Length: 196
Image: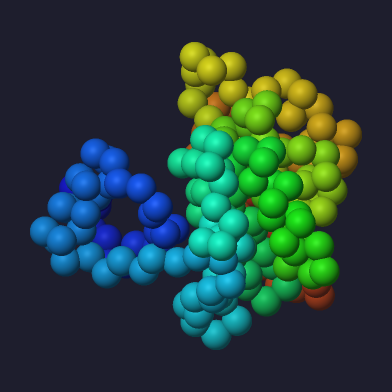
């Protein structure tokens, strides 16, 4: 935030202050950045056919255990027939709560691409959550040779077992997705290594 020009920031509702959050507020105020504080049920319209649905956190159903991770911002970016779900650092407890809250509307949770929660930690991406989202592609943001052993091998195996194509920043580098509409949607995933 100190070095990049930022016009708008979307952040999940914060339920507790921290040193990092105070630093965040100081920079935001100093640079006069627009901040949108959101929670479950809100929609941000970006332009025609492009919007963000906020799925979590839910002020009425806060998770106390490991609250910073489990109350991470979870949202779905939708462009026409294409969607990506971003899951922050949520863990199994939050995944269960989200599944329960959307049990009557599971279409809201389905996405073409899933950004895997918590860098592929074993605490996330449960079988039920994965089957409900039903992604074609999984993206894992993770540092190479990290001390936590992310991503977890069981998570990788679970993704492969469900027929999900996996891209990881530790092995594939920077990842970008180009979605082109021809007769139907086709995707191209670009990594620093090559086009796929």
